[in-house]
Length: 243
Image (cartoon, rainbow, N blue to C red; front, side, top):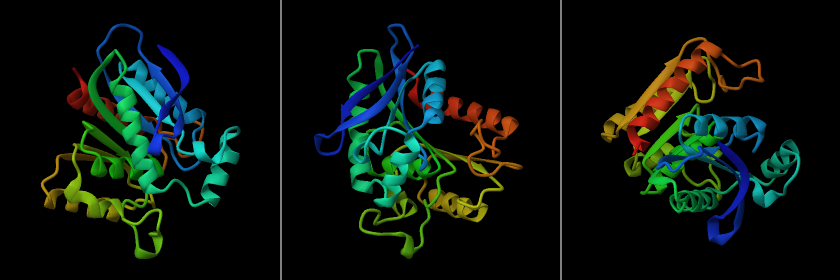
């Protein structure tokens, strides 16, 4: 594969830093936008981007904190959090730009999926509800898909669950039953909403796993559950992003 830093045009034409990994060869390949978690655009998310490319997809991970500076991911993430994080409208514009960038690549097969982790899981659901040209979405333990009124603000005015009627693509959910954000009860609530609106989805829940159980460098890592969940993710991508 080839992996490199690139820039593309995001919300309002701004240059967005991103990490792109792609298989060598003519393809065509399905493509995946990889959304990082709240701690930032770090080595872990780049490893996941390469993992997806290793399985035969062009993968791009935008740095959602580009506007807050460059340098140490922890420091940039702290600045971003202090500023309230990326506004939802800005995020959706950045995703539209990432999808366009992928489709213009000569080895793209025209299909674009999205996957996100933690806050990125919420973002994946948001993008899948706001954009009508994605082909698949994966929410990995997205917190605040369901949000109380006091958790909403001008930059984040709506809970993604309230956008379920507009959800435009098949949604895969990956959750640990020991997680507290989202809790199993919140996952149940989200699933009930998807059923009510007749959406195409699959939710997979794992006992003995909590938040961030894919993180190989953290105590939360659960190798057995993570391996099983990655298998479901790649089956989902094969179903909806293959040529």
